[in-house]
Amino acid sequence: MEILTLFVIILEILFLFFIISKENNLYFKKIYETMGKNFVKRSKLEIEFRNKRFDKKSYIIFFAIFLFSLFLDTKMITIIFISFIMFFLLKLQISYEKFSKVFINYNPNVKKYNFYLLFILFLQVATIILTFFISR
Image (cartoon, rainbow, N blue to C red; front, side, top):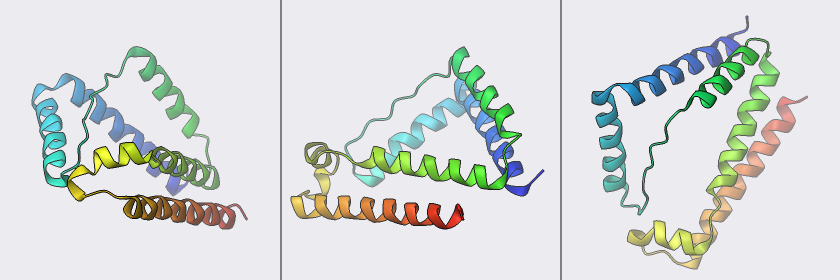
């Protein structure tokens, strides 16, 4: 078994323990909610945290992904990680109205919004270039 595959399996097991303890342990659930509230206070962003429950269907999908990850090699795992990064970067692109609502405490304007979009575009281009070099 390769190192990166072992790393992914360890991450999946840790994620499973996190989900189980977040839903079933009241003390951990309280800590999780407090961390979300503290993050909002420290960052001064106007966002809200929603705790989603992990249902039976999600557990089945998770275990299917876990079994599938046993057969992946290093290059495949790297491409999957890069795909997740690109998906996350695409989710960060928001409209100017939403940007001004989230960053209301930081005096949002069009210049800051354009810099925000330029930074996300730079990260996407860097990820595409990284993918090109990894796939060779």
